[in-house]
Image (cartoon, rainbow over all chains, first blue to last red; front, top):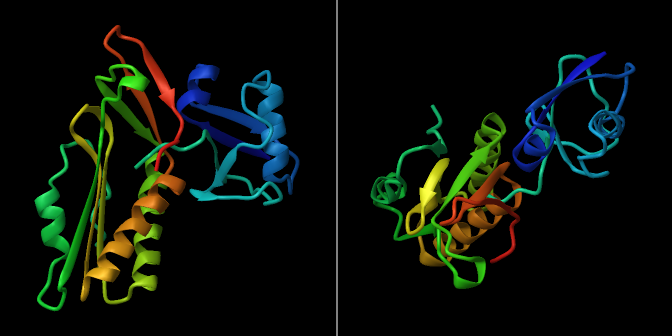
Length: 79
Length: 140
């Protein structure tokens, strides 16, 4: 299944883009999506980043569905 | 209809305060987070705030909803500014109205702490020489 992964801030800057398309097997988890992103980007994203699925923080074992909005989130600094 | 929690305009603290006041609410607390210049960080001229906007709106909304669960008689309003905020101007405002001051203070503190912990918002400092650097959350 195809998943679009949004990246932000320092990660987007390191990658020179703000989104990546990732091909994953059905039932893949957030963890395997992060691994795929790391492979595609020469490990410019750390091993266990903050990840959101459909705009909520998600744990590494969260399963993904086609069309999910996944985001890899650098350490936050708002407020 | 939920009020927006993100804006690119200077924050109107008076309007935010007014939105949480009411005849039964004896205590009103306002927190403003202001972009500061600190000698140890270099002469920061301002901060560029960016966000995962769709999620930041939702997460700020969840924080306000949770505050209302903890303090059911309270009114809570939050506004975070995005874009370039010069030193000395506010980047975030939290206003709470409650029947008594203990809850107003406690809820206000809790909300800003949660915003800093959870909101997908980032900041990049602008320095006088034109350099810019990403900031990681540090201070309390």
